[in-house]
Image (tube, rainbow, N blue to C red; front, side, top):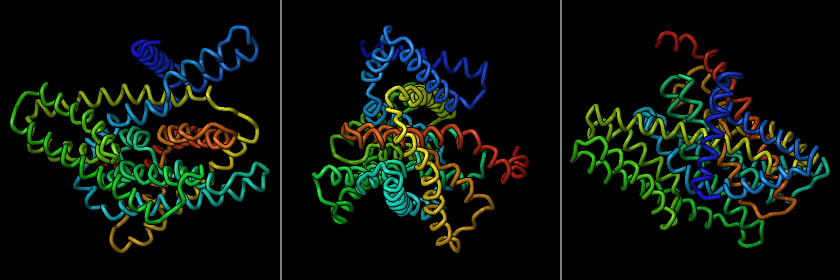
Length: 419
């Protein structure tokens, strides 16, 4: 298949399954696409098991192989989705919660990785599908960061207080950079290629995360100055598109974090440029353009998450590992949020229910699956990939559909007052 044919197939599937979800199931759009994609994959795999002569599984595997989910997300979709999400984050509230966001995006990820890795290692031994400790820590690193794409797509429908929304969004925008660095270090050590080193970890973190942040701010400032010098909405939309595509490609060449760069650039454009460089007409056009692009790419991404069911080896031991991992991830999330909350309670006045919403709203998504798909082929990869997929599926379907109920329980009166 050509690139155009593949893209056309994915968009057609997203539109068709989205229509069926809207008419028949009425789940939230991204959740519905994930569920419908997973059900479609299960159906195709089931048909292939009953009638292998049709060769359906081979066709599905070939299509998924051409998509290359990990590269598609990490090298293509992620830059657009992070920028679009960051445009809507209020920088004022984010700066008010900056120490909380920093603690959650760094210490929280480290604590969660250690807790999940150690607990998963012990439980894997007890249940007889033992995994090396380093591989369990690799799993902890890839599953600990909340997925900014999943979180931002759900946040748009919650209507939680602005300060809490900024904290949740800020954490999700920046903690994936820390998680990816941890993942790469641990994966290198697990593969025998590089010994674990605190100094090396700090070096990678500052080069990738801090370098990406500075690059994003620098490129965002250049785009802001260009937008301020003109008043032509189509050209300013094109400048924003050039910022995302060119900036992400440049970050890859420089060896810094592209996701962090796009988050920083999006925050600058969505706050500073919106307020000081754009007319109302330009602001409206830019918002509409990125909202539409965000919706289309989110649809394709969550459809792909569902379709990846066909790539999973659902052996009993792998499913058991995934079912064990789900409560471990939730407990680690509760601890990694709870400790920063306790330490910073004197600095911030946390609203009742903020802790519960942040714990349950820490959704995992495509980034975790993409990282798991980057693991070298083998039985260890199959176990980690299946566990990752089941955690993500639970997160998107169960947490994604119930977080709104939790938010309304704690903030219903305030939301009604605002409405």
